[in-house]
Image (cartoon, rainbow, N blue to C red; front, top):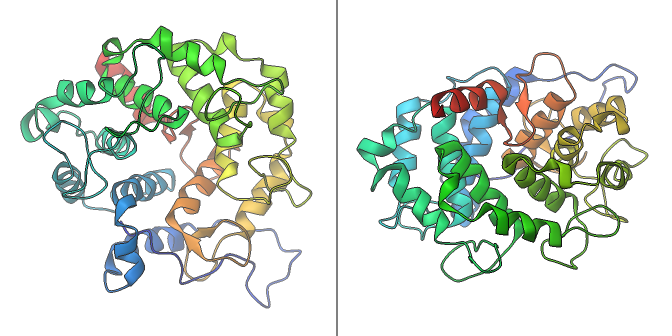
Length: 341
């Protein structure tokens, strides 16, 4: 799945009545995503190889939310994911890339989405447990933090990713959940938001990772819901879009990071959903499909999936329900939970 941007741009097409109710161009989004891996002659295709496996997750999830789960060949997806696995159990962003937490999480999410986690036992390097041990090996048992890879950078993104993948694999017992939860608590700020590390600035993306981790651990009781909900609701701008922190521009991707966090703490009604839906729809390329960060910019698969996920959380007609904790279809998460029992 290519991370190539464009060629289309988000925005209401010329000649269209601005007063006309915006709508979702479902079929064009499906065709846009399916076309992404045909653009291998473009330089940007190769410059974004370090995000390739993440891109497969974004595109596949978008297609599932659009109600088109079979738009990409299942066997080809599985084969590509398995080609990215390293001997240590983790997954790289592409074949022959070093393993990293983020690409490993995407690999697990992809395999869970296409109901292929069992393939790990026959096709993978050591099965589920090898992946679980790779992830667990990235935890600092003294601080509870997780590194992204062997080089040691820590971030609450990696902590959330570990919780996400291990819970889907039913291997949470491999890590020190208590220490990790304590670290998340240390990242909470006076405004109710969360930073990348203790005393770091609050950011909507980190709110999602921290609240998501607490949700998986069963500790949403530790969240100051009203204070965090107020801070998140203040991310909405006059044009209906959401930003990630004060004084920043609106961006479609925050339709996911902010909304999912609000959904997890039962404060989704604290923003104007109608205005946000209209903003996301204005960011579509009505001719070629795809969604951009804001009107006038080029579309890409990253903003496409998170725009669709935001619309799904808002109950937009025609979209499959998304799970606010995992950013995967709800019915797939339910299936994974049932299988793990």
